[in-house]
Length: 349
Image (cartoon, rainbow, N blue to C red):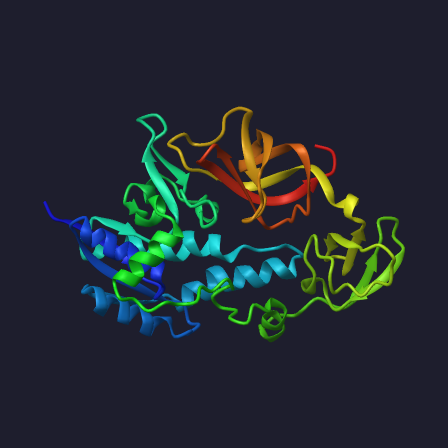
């Protein structure tokens, strides 16, 4: 029986090499480029990749969904004094959703992307497991915590067993032109989210006071959307010791700051949690390593379920800059258990 796969093609070398690996494995490969309404020249590069590697490329216009599910979410979180992670939301609501729908429509058996992560069968009770890619510097499993058995059952990550260096070498052997990797949010090419929000059709927060933990006014801000938890630079506060943003109060248009030692918290509460395994949710307290942002080194934690899809997380070592709106993602070793969205940090957990 012919093996077939629909690969999400971005125009970069990761998805291109993933396609080539699958062709080598005997798959009939087709590509899907998802238009998000923010042209960046990637569609031309995706078409060039498909032509070079010899597979058909389909174009899907998802601009309306992207603006509603990703861009509006992104703006709304900042206006609410939270720190969004649009890549995680895009993976769940745009990339994997449309890849699965298009693969089903076109009669293709699997879907694939260029993510650096791995999928392994963990047995009948747990189902398919999601694991870190072997290249720890490029591992992207953190961004995939919302994927479940529905997606994993059809999904292939060809790059998960390879390093970025190996992928670059393969791209060179395939005659693919080198491309500078973008670290920015795809719909904010200059990486200036403040400018983006100020041109977005919303009512922005008003300027207000920056206060210390005792309520003393120590400065002014241009709007709560212009600061993030843990920020030190750009606060324009005259002081011998630097201040850091501890909290954002949108009701009072107020930013609360403190010293470096004031940033540490003993835990957090996360909501809207999802779990990768077949089991519906965490049923009892478990030990895991919690990552509170992408480049975080992780912290050993005790995770206890709460009603309504929430969890209480107690850090074994206090952590700083726990930002509401960011993802808390839970691992045991290389295995991703699941995650949720940080509702608040807990000074004493």
